[in-house]
Length: 146
Image (cartoon, rainbow, N blue to C red; front, side, top):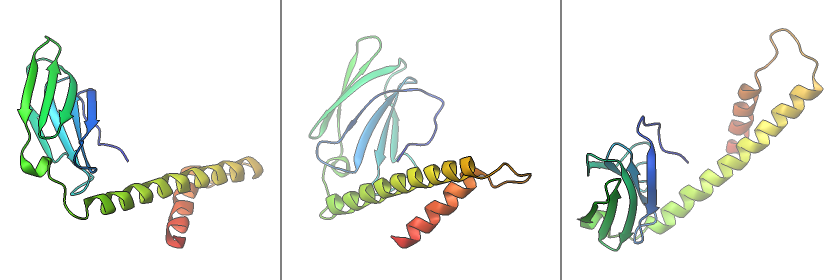
């Protein structure tokens, strides 16, 4: 699993102590990003400008977040209920998401190894198959088997 690319470097991050699918990231451009994998995995759930200076650290305790910047200022934020309160099925759903991603990574490693082995054994031909294409095809086959 990974976040999408952003031009501002990430400086710190932490998981929510109360919600297993939620994590916080601080950025060099002074923004705090909140990622909620329980609701959506492809984009930031919430982003807030905290400082004009680079944010350097974050610590979350229950419904409070302490965020430090490069000038030594610490911002204390009270988190709203949806960022603190977990749902009944969140832990179960997030466990399934993490297990699925772990299987996907394992399948990608196997497919890459198979593609590398196949490429090493096969003589190089004009128009030969692309190892990445082979790995993706193998991943799709393995995913169907699961």
